[in-house]
Length: 170
Ligand code: ADP
Image (cartoon, rainbow, N blue to C red):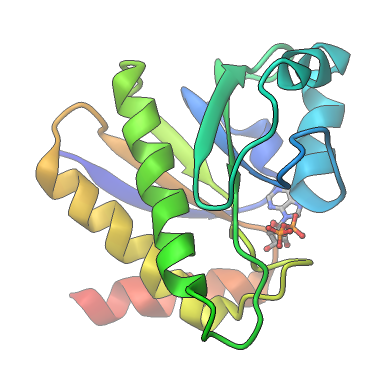
């Protein structure tokens, strides 16, 4: 049975086929989860990213995971939050959808997401979380390839938001 899981911790330690990176449009590294993933994967990741020529907001690109437990990293670029009237919600949904579709095209069965855009990019987690869960649910209904979608929350406060949103679905 396909499952959505919520965990709290460092996404770089997860044993899944792919972890998703909340990258910026250059794909050449940054702070937050992006910095943590590059540090854990090693310098080969930056080399691989250089050949990708960046990534548009809402789109996703894939590289190997190098020194990570995860075999792949899917890099997606979330929208910067400007108050909600600049297509931020649609762009965030596109990040989740395009990452899941890319994973499926590579035959992957498990994937872990951080809270894309909810750090430095300022997207309120209370608005981002239902989008993330909604895209995951919709995807699991459409496909059989992916059997495990993990939402990795860095903070306890974020974990609570995800728990409440999942509970509200029951
Ligand atoms: P963005 O620029 O897309 O907002 P950030 O990296 O600033 O990206 O933050 C995205 C989310 O990732 C935030 O919820 C932040 O707390 C979380 N985060 C930061 N480091 C890690 C990590 N090592 N593992 C999982 N999540 C992380």
